[in-house]
Figure 1 (cartoon, one colour):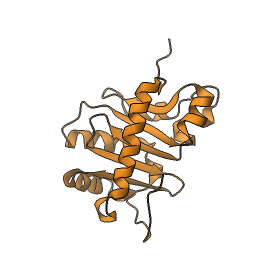
Figure 2 (cartoon, helix red, strand yellow; figure 1 turned 135 degrees about the vertical axis):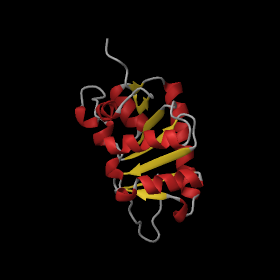
Figure 3 (cartoon, rainbow, N blue to C red; figure 1 turned 90 degrees about the horizontal axis):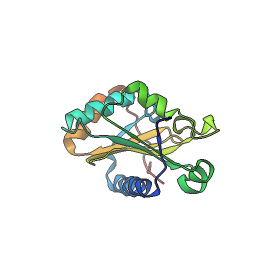
Figure 4 (cartoon, rainbow, N blue to C red; figure 1 turned 90 degrees about the vertical axis):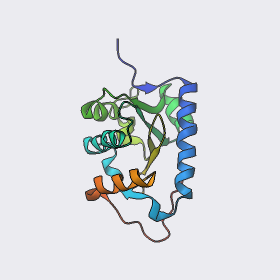
Length: 174
């Protein structure tokens, strides 16, 4: 029997979707200097997975799971309509970096090009327990991270080679 990867329960997805969109609105309220901006191209890589696991250890939540939630294309009108599942994957502590990349590249059902790694251009990554959020917008080639002062400093130091400077007036929109 094939192991379920994508969320197919509407109630479970609604919870993730609500948290993701609320987190996105919270990000929009932060002053630009409070956020860590980095290259969104890394979010579906082993490098980002290692960052997330290190961050979970840093915040004393190493046993926490985290979710990747697709915001665009439309999770309801497009993704669920075509695949009878939602664009969200929850990664467990026992998942490794290969599992992360493989699951993000998993065909949602008859359309490999619609895997989250390939056809999701706006998304959120967040731990189940809360405490931080990362939002990516591939159309702007930018991702943003927000958390406590300590976790933000950790992210800035850990993602040094991936940091980007945003243009004045840059806004997170979704």
